[in-house]
Image (tube, rainbow, N blue to C red):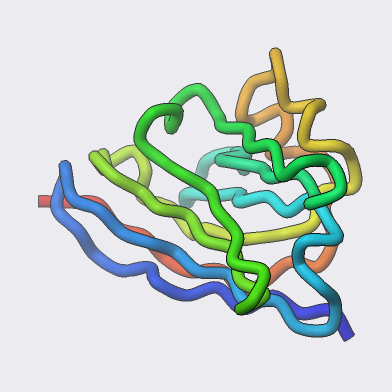
Length: 134
């Protein structure tokens, strides 16, 4: 059974950093494209970052609002996906999920974060809460 477990969320002051983890079980993580998606209360779901499978060269993609601040990476030996989040802003506060997009990561190019946030995903984790506040 495919399962994701996210961790690493918490409270941080603006300008701070957090590293989220997403550990997969039931399948080798690098065989699939994996995305980080977030949702804040009362807001649309947003795509944050996407990494293609190893066979597709593990290319990374980011939403415009997080480019230059967030980094997605994957440790295949631990079957774990990470999201390093730096220079955090209050608007980054949300529940962060990892999930398997049912479309190629390359299809995020030129599309807004709420667009690819609203697309189909599979294998959602339970999410991890991030609060950025002073």
